[in-house]
Image 1 (cartoon, rainbow, N blue to C red):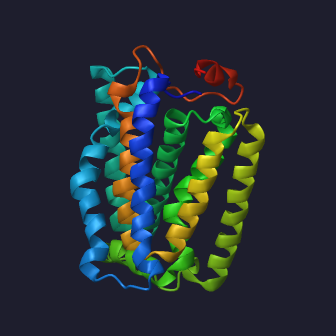
Image 2 (image 1 turned 60 degrees about the vertical axis):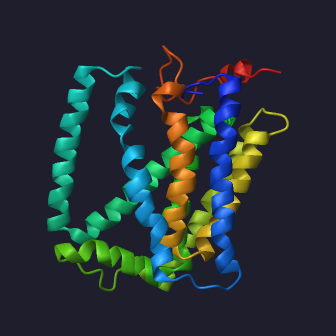
Image 3 (image 1 turned 180 degrees about the vertical axis):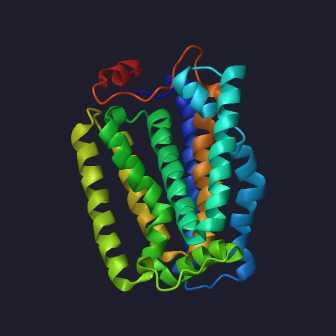
Amino acid sequence: MGVNSLDEDVRRTLARPALAAGWIGVAVAALPTRAGVELPTTLRYAPLVASVVLFGLPHGAIDYVALPRAVAGRVTGRWLAVVGCLYLVLGGAYVVAWFAWPVAAALAFVALTWLHWGQGDVYSLAVLLDADYLDSRARRVATGVVRGGLPMLVPLLGHPETYREVVAAFAAPFGGNVGDLWLFTPDARLVLGVAFAVVTVGTLAANRLATAESPPTAWRVDAAETVGLWAFFLVVPPVFAVGVYFCLWHASATSPARSPSTAPRGTRSRPATSGSPSSDSRARRRP
């Protein structure tokens, strides 16, 4: 699969609670909106604040090992120095960008989150569900684009004014003004919405054709989650939806899968090439 493989018993132990937390959390969080209840401001922001304080810091605390594990399969002092330098250089450049181009920096933050959350869901599908169709680089990229776009793009389609307010709040402390940015116009939302819907359907179709699993359990879960998250982010207020998603979906599903304790010794987590055989994944499955 090109990512860390788990023993089947470990996979079952991790997958059920990690995935269920996201499913149940999203379903419950959608109930007030479906019932026509408007949540008070404090409650809308509570999950987002909790995500930063309680989950964001611990969840991000293992990010520094991602690159060493992906390239070398282990974490060494040399790799820690390399990662530290990268953080210093890239982080410093990004700080400068906030002061020089605040609106662009705010949108770059959205793009980085899109990339990170998409990659996180792809990793969870591969590790927790052993999705065999992710043996192709193209399908992994497409799936990541779709999964990351659900929390980062779909709220723009359903709640453009709130999305605009959030981006403006990011940029304002640095002197930025979103003004009449094309991104928030009806025409832009129409183009982006249609394009993203086409990419979503095309990706799910390509993944279904590529899977050799029978029945295609992993693909069914993937498709159900994708459709469910489309609806969730389209109707639920964005700040509340993103906070719930981070706490109960992204952090709970990806942290167990990415934890060093779940990686078999000697396993390299280098991404697979498009030509890597999916049969390796299927061969690891137990009857």
